[in-house]
Image (cartoon, rainbow, N blue to C red; front, top):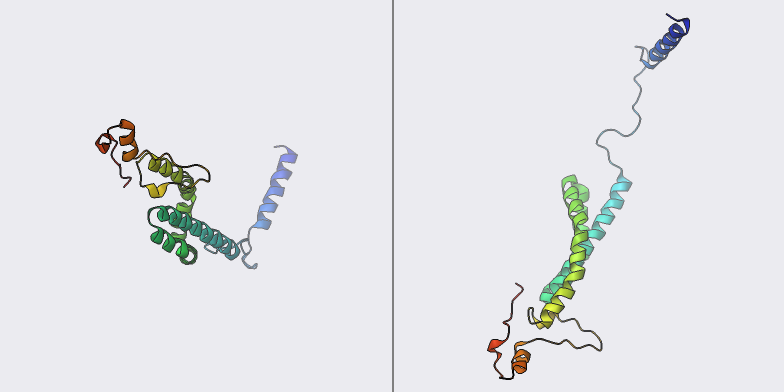
Length: 171
C-alpha cells in the first residue's frame, strides 16, 4: 500500500473516533426541534390566513345565495366573518380539521372563478327566459331584451304565447 493512503486512512479513523461518544461524555443533543413540535408563529399566521380564506368563501357563497333569496344570502353574509374565525380556531386546535379546511380552501380558487362567472350566465339566461328575471343585472343605460313568452307571442303576430319557448327552471 501507498504511504499516503495509509496516512489518509489513519486520519479518517481518528476523525471517526472523535465523533463517536466515549462513556465519559454526556450524550449530545440533537439540533433542531423535538419531533412533533410546531412553530406557533407559523401556525398563528396560517390560522389567520385560513380564517380570511374561509370568510371570503362564506362571503362568496352568501353573494350567490342572495341572488336566489335575499334573506338567506344576507344571513350568510352577516355570519361569514364569525363562522370563518370559529372554523379557523377549531382548525388551530385539531390538525386533521386544519388539513381538510386547507385543502378545501386551495380548491376554492376555482369556486371563486365560478362565482365570478355565474352572475353573467344567470343574467343572460334570465334575458332569454331560461332563469327568473330576478337574475337580471342592472346596467346603467342598457335595458334587457327580455325574450319572454309575451314578447315571442307579439313577434308571432297572433297574440298566442303557446308557441313561445317555455320557462326552464335552473333548479
